[in-house]
Length: 241
Image 1 (cartoon, helix red, strand yellow):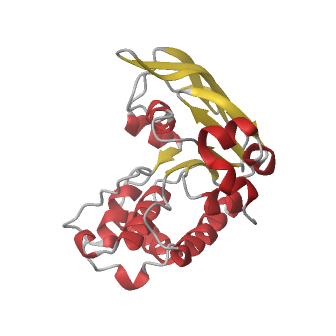
Image 2 (cartoon, rainbow, N blue to C red; image 1 turned 45 degrees about the vertical axis):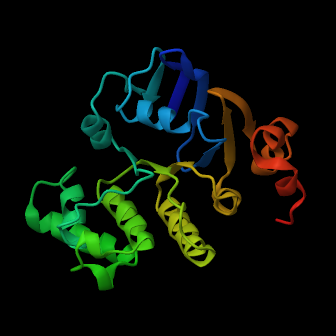
Image 3 (spheres, rainbow, N blue to C red; image 1 turned 90 degrees about the vertical axis):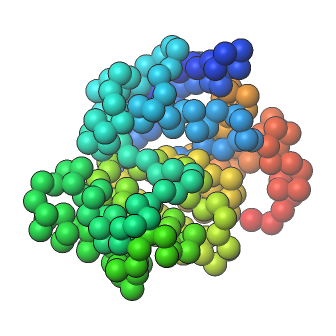
C-alpha cells in the first residue's frame, strides 16, 4: 500500500531524514517512535505533501506522491491528523465533520448524513452541537479523528493522538483505533505513549537523528539495545507489560 524509498531531507545543516525506507501492507498498524527531533513529523509532512524531500520517492498504491499538494493526497485516501489539534473553533462539531466529508462528497445532505454517522462512531454524539472551542482536549482529539475519518481514508496517519490525555482516556482511544483498523483502514502512527504503541502496533519503526535504527515486531524492537539506549531507557525494558 505504501512504499517509502530512501527519503532524505536537510534543513540547512540539519539532516532531518537520511535514506529512510519503509513499506506497509493493507490493514497493518505500524508505529513510528523515537526521541524528539528524530525526524518523525518531517516524515509525515513529506508523505502528506507539506514538505518536499531532497531525495527519494514515495508510492501510495503504486502512485507517486511527491509533487502532489496535500488536498490531492488526502483525496487519494492518505490522510493525517496533527499533533496540535486545530478544529474550526467557531463551528459546531457536526459542521467540523461535514466540512471534512466534502473531501469525497459534493451534496450537503450526503455530507451531513456521513458526519452524523462518524460522530456517533467517535463517541461525540452528545457534543454534536458544541462549538470547537468548547471541547476538552480529549474531545478535541476525538473530533480530529472524526474529521480524518470523514475524508474516507485508506491509510490513516495519527500524529501523537494520545498525547496529553489520561490512562482511562488512552484506553478508550486505543479501542476506537482498533475498531477503525477492523473496518479496513491501515494505520501509521507516531506515538510517545508506549502503552498505546504496544497495544496497537503490529510493527514498529524507530528513528533517531533522522536514521532508521530498528524495525520489526514490537517485542523485538523494545528489547533492541540501540532502541533502549536512544529512546526507551532501561526502566522501560524491565517494566512489566
